[in-house]
Image (tube, rainbow, N blue to C red; front, side):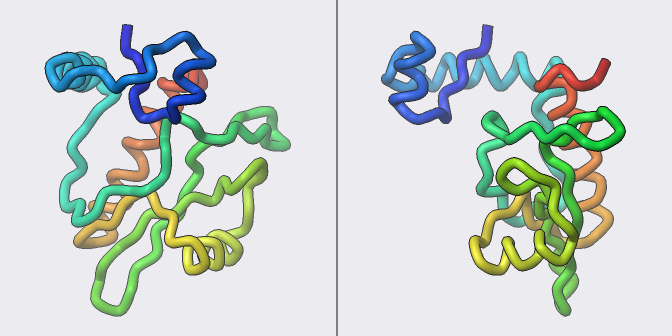
Length: 138
């Protein structure tokens, strides 16, 4: 069993999980297990990790009956740096324009990459990983 360790102490306590973070040995074992299961991957070309808690994403029902958690777009600056940003914000899917406005206001992103291809590859892998984590891949 993998115990989430990046949740607030209050959330961990409410779920009956120890409030103190697990040891480095436990975290290493959990990471190895997640990697083996395809739930942890090392993104190629990532220059900055995302700053959004992927273990606590809102789940939004789409009109077609599917569910979105990490629907995203990639935006690229004039230097070629590509940033993956979510289009699921709060409890709704927003337009690309609103997602960009939200990013500029909050700085929230899923990762920064050296180029658009690496960012898009990451976004696809993240989508699959999140679908599996949230049981939406069936």
